Image (cartoon, helix red, strand yellow):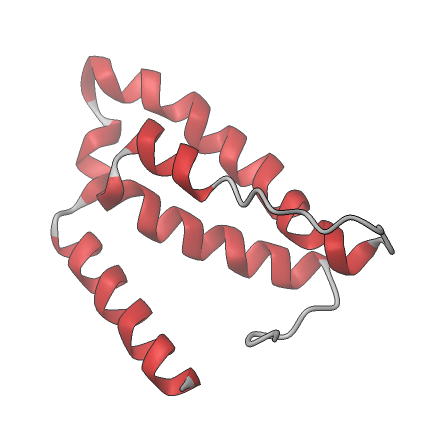
Length: 99
């Protein structure tokens, strides 16, 4: 099942990268997208890593992925969320496939 999830994730990332989402960061509208993009890279990895860093009795149910998708659009959000997941893996003792 994990290989199926990885294959679906790889297909989504390849589809998103085929649209060249970095073009959205150029021009007048690109400056408006830069702030939520950088805020996502700073805040979201810590939110994703929080359940493994602290013994909190209430599990965090908000991932933030939907708001990132609405702010940036799917071609930019998919690779960004992949990068957020990698950063969260580096700052917490999580594995790639945590169940």
